[in-house]
Image (tube, rainbow, N blue to C red; front, side):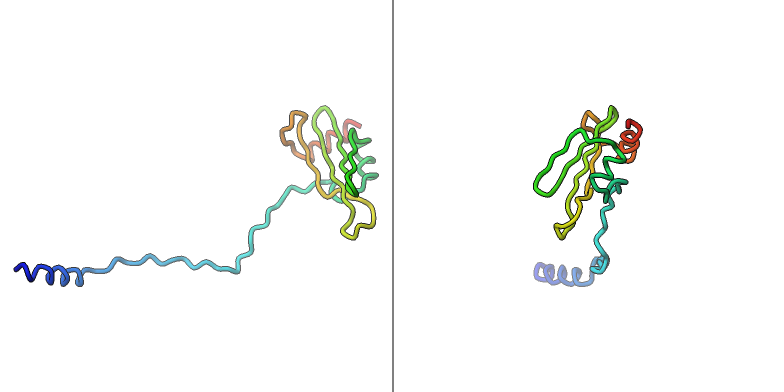
Length: 121
């Protein structure tokens, strides 16, 4: 009987049903990467002169090479506008990025900040 035990075990194991395999979902490589949408600003694309006409004189002006940072302040918020020349290097600098914050440094809605700056004029 001892000699039959290993053979019997193998026989029983062979008769057992194999566990069902869970199908692996197919991943398509043709799915484009998600596009990160950043809130658009009403001042992107404006020149320095257009900014001044809308928001008044900046409280701070910093020039670094061919780029320019203009900072506008009110009691409600601070708006930084970063102006860069076109890719060709020729032409007027234009706002390519802007950032708004409360005087404490906390983020604030840019549209609300722009509106507050326009009202403060």
